[in-house]
Length: 98
Image 1 (tube, rainbow, N blue to C red):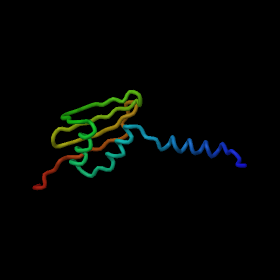
Image 2: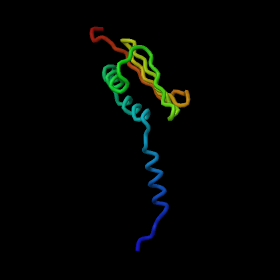
Image 3: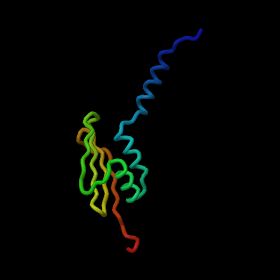
Image 4: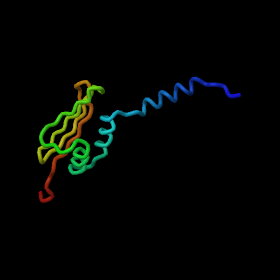
C-alpha cells in the first residue's frame, strides 16, 4: 500500500500557482520577445486592434492597466500594476536611408 504524502501535493500546488500568468503578464512576455518597430506594432494591433495616439486598457479584476502609444514614428507599450509601471518597451521607426 502506498503512503499518502501531503508535502508532495503542497509543493505541486505551489509550483502550479507560480507558473500561472494572467492576460497582461502573457502579453508582457510576448512583447519582451519582439525585435523591432514593425514586430511590436503588429503584435499590439493584433491584440488590441487599430489604434493611433494614446490608448489605456484597464484590467480591473487584476488591478492592472496597459498603456499604448502610437504616433506614426514611435510605438510604446507599458504595463502597470496598482498604478505603478513594472514594464515598458518602445521603438522608433528609423528610415534605412539615413
